[in-house]
Image 1 (spheres, rainbow, N blue to C red):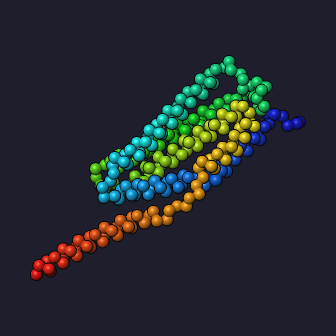
Image 2: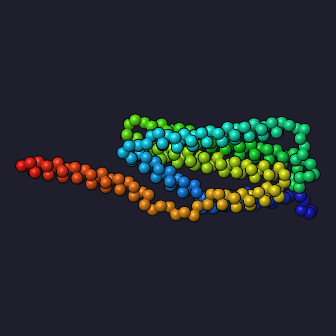
Image 3: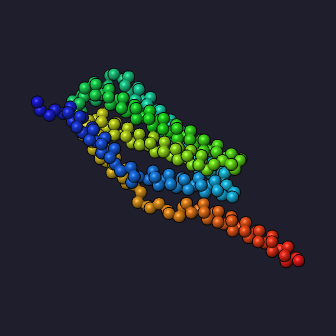
Amino acid sequence: MGFEKKDLDVVLIPVGLLIIYLHQPHSTVMGFENFNKLFWVRAIMQSEKREIGTCLGVISSNISAATFLASVSLTLCSLIGAWISNTNNNFFESELIYGDTRSTTLSVKYISLLICFLLAFTCFIQSARHFVHANYLISMPSLSVPPKSVEVAVIRGGDFWSVGLRALYFAMNLLLWFFGPIPMFAGSIFMVLFLHYLDSNTMPLIEHEFEFDGGQVVRKVEQRVSDIAMAIHMPSHQN
């Protein structure tokens, strides 16, 4: 019993997915972006005169981008559904595809690709939801809103955004699977190299960022002490 071409799907597809899975997530900019977003929220919430217009503009741009990509993902899901219903297209079952061309394997390919697009749609919708919630919290007139609530909303919105993008990247590799396991395996290696170039972070985290809180408190305390000293000094001067 020799090694047949349909067995390539059994070998190359898991190896290709494993290469993507083992790609170091700690080397990406996700943690770096979350760190900067955390500092951004704290800086906004602690400022004396919060720039509400600028903050809401930044969050609104994220909401618009997440909504647009959610619409794109849903449109791609509809296209996959129309593609599945088109039974006259037997190109991916022909001998031109080097690999497993059975109808069962083809159904697995369709379902896997559809799941990726649905996952991306769900993540982008959740990202927009959390950014809208952060928008409400920042624009609230009361100053008693805890910064932690805004931090959680912004960080979760960014995390869902990143997962949605990863789902789209993953779907691109599954799309190559329709042309055989070899293009999918090569696409997995290229995707890892591309993400390493696109998302790798070599910049160290700025250590003094969280000193902003202490610096603000120290300046406020110094200003308060100066005011009290001036108030005490002026009556004694008058006497």
